[in-house]
Image (cartoon, rainbow, N blue to C red; front, side):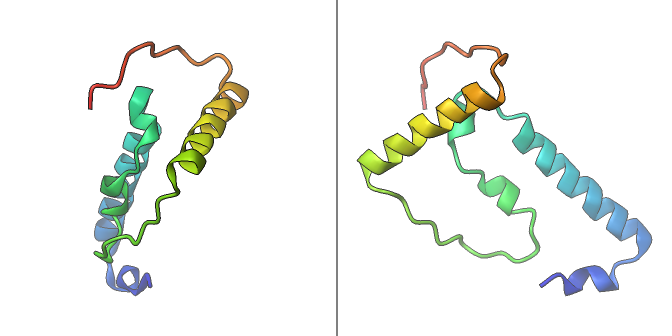
Length: 89
């Protein structure tokens, strides 16, 4: 799957690492309501250009997952700043 890396010279590999790090940082630095969205820009950093085959849970299960995700943020980042704004997407 990653055979393309075998043919890259050092400078090309460094460029690839920098591109991937920038993508990871952009994902890491997501905050507020943007935490709830999937991130196709991050997936787009991969060399294989495929349309992800996502499956979406039914609403009640989806909302329970959102609630559990928010609870996990309370556990993992209890001192995080509060982003008290409505979503206007």
